[in-house]
Image (tube, rainbow, N blue to C red; front, side, top):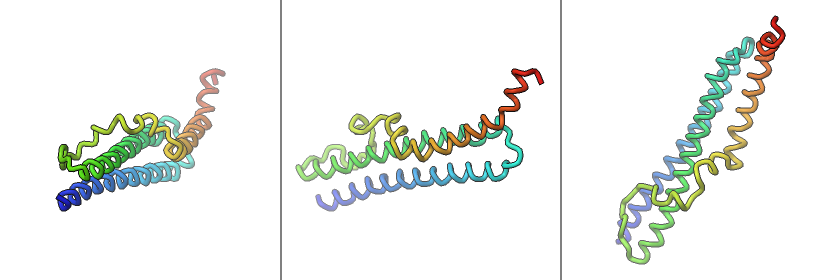
Length: 148
């Protein structure tokens, strides 16, 4: 009985570790993408290129990071549930690694996405990119309105 509990919580802990690793990797890719594109195009920034190559992928990374963080939270709830229920002798959902049973016990995807840490981590680079896009498209906007 105790051996099964250890195996089950090890499986859940591996899932938690995998979600945390995925989140960490996404953050690394996001910062790398931003740094490489801004470094390689520092002289000639095309606003459309910058939007397509950095702004949209950063939004995607932000969404995926929130997904992995929320899934990790669901696995943590599952871990707590397994410890509590197995001590009481219940064996239902044994080795079931689907965390969706706990989706109502954690924050929504949007709440996780706009949590303080993710908002700062992805919001600042997005604002910088948006500022660079707007700054570099001022000539284009000016020509449209002035008829240059």
